[in-house]
Length: 377
Image (spheres, rainbow, N blue to C red):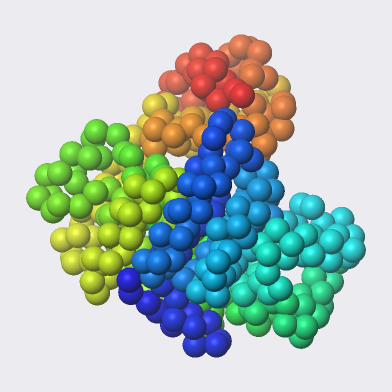
């Protein structure tokens, strides 16, 4: 295992961290964690050199922290730094922060959270937590030794990221980053800005929820033709480790095979620097992904506004993402939660007023029906 300096206390973190949001299950119920299997996975990771474990209050419907706490019994807690998160959506009063934190200490069977994050900050979430004086609350926990370092995870645009960075002397931050998401959310701008402030960056979703590990055949062909023997997951992880400013990369592992494979990749990562030829291959893969569209929508917006409120470009973007990565889980969640009922494809009346506005001459009502059938719950 390779290590990098992380944070103000000169901690040397493993370059690979264990993300506990995709633990093995006994059934379709995400709270029904296979505890013996999860324990074996986490302990194998720790025995092999991983020393950073990341979980959150809401993962696995509240059961991830409990599973991690049990896995870290028998002396394993002392071998790792533990990270978990305050769920802004569950905070509706200052008292909620104390209640949630006490519950987390109990679940995790610990008296201290080494790395505590404000979870999934956006402008709305940050403004909400500031209204409850979250920084003053967190400082009290730092002073009491119940929190070691304070950071945040993030899901918004780069300007909001910079604003949040500038409003506090953060110990670290966590962003979604992979070779397909350099312009999404905090993106490369955010990574570079945090690095310029000497704030350690933890990367989540280096495999984009597993999508980059299981690409469609056209993507696999590009990797195969390169003549370089690496799995798609290996390409993605090596790319992430090669980016300046990244301290460690989290991987959400779901079985022992994935743990062993990720450990192998981390152990063989060498200098973490990809060659110019490697980067050209990644660029070709990225272009192939972006060129892959089930619906040839350019997001020009000429079809908007829809007379009945349907957000046509957003629906098409979600469907194209599902098809591009051969993974419908994220887009289905976005369809159900990010769009209001009247904005979803299901609200299309078939009036066809949008057809004359579309430069691509798309049969928009027919395509919206396809979207709804694919993304409805």
